[in-house]
Length: 217
Image (cartoon, rainbow, N blue to C red; front, top):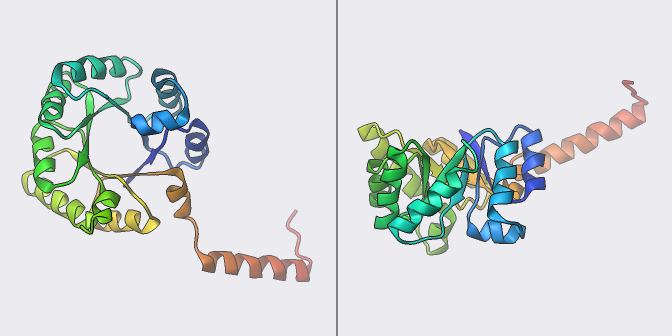
């Protein structure tokens, strides 16, 4: 499974990249706004740091303007994945971008039918939103499983990119289902390393080492 980090915070990306925990990055207008930086400036810096796909999202809602924006974003770097919404105009733009050789991330997916359309449009990634499904008492993990099954049934190459990840358990559950990629905030990715028994065991080892006067160097 590939790990993408969902942020436009350069320092957070750098920290995780140094831990070899970043296979790619996803951004959106809200994350760009939170960074307080120009979209082209911060996206270019991310692309220079990370060799994997970096999703940059259009803000237009109509096909022709999506094309103009997506092509402009694609000029930033070769590893840009143009991010479009799962609407009819977005799917049409996805097909055009895919035909032009660009990676495309189709976002805001909330049903298996939508995911099927994205695959037929040539999407590189489909981004179903687990957490937002859970928020309205629907099981987001069931959606991941349904998409995985449909894609496997027909050999679609679109990668299932589980998004709106809220907890480390979401990540392990997606891995069991067979999601190709997850994207999560930095704190959730770092939380994968946490376990109270690890902390307890380490504290005991450190205390015993001090009592025994153990020094390695």
